Image (cartoon, rainbow, N blue to C red; front, side, top):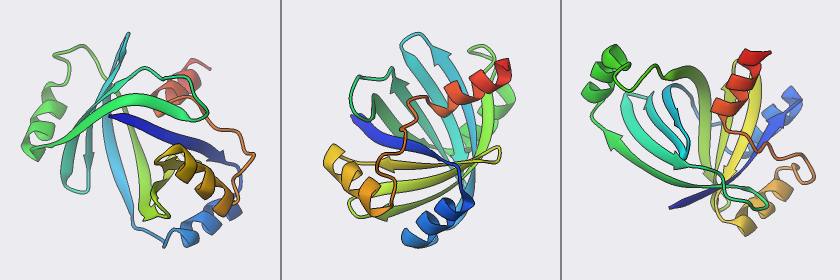
Length: 159
């Protein structure tokens, strides 16, 4: 499957509040992420809301929005708990936490993310639905962040 999304960093708490209200004020959940970065993509093991997931993501594909191959499936929470204790078997993973509020909205999944005090909105769906929602949410013309959260955090760590 190809995941398509537009990710935009929100510079204003007013934008955050406006979008949060527009998408129905969904509950915020903490996500715990272990990432293994490989030449052709990355593998993520994530825990959120008493559920665990494994996700494989390929490298980005050129396009108007962020596109990349992705496969994700739920795994037993016991696997995540054991993995979090034995996680170095593939080498040391990159770890981060973020808070996320997400909602199905106007044909897309809209996610608000708090990543260490920086707020982002992700709009996931088909290209035309993403464009429509960028307009509806007042985000047309804003810069789309091309980097993954892993790339953003690694860049900050190097500073």
